[in-house]
Length: 102
Image (tube, rainbow, N blue to C red):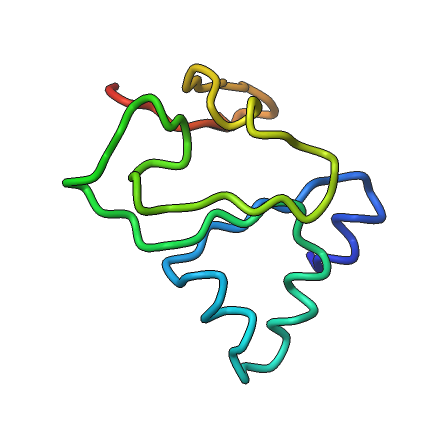
């Protein structure tokens, strides 16, 4: 499944990266700029467990930043209560979200 397919089918792209946005933007890796062109939201920076802050929602640790490349999402979408959805379909269980504790 390609990023273009996601966009053509009205799916959003949220990218979590252990690298800072400045590192990604100036990277010489093939496909990096195309990846950013199809990304709605970038959450950059390494997740650091010691900097975990529950109030940050899915961002995780306080050293990470959120970059919005489209108007599809806003900051309030990422600061809401963390939740998990369990979907049972065709003898499969799909999990969407970030559980704090199971």
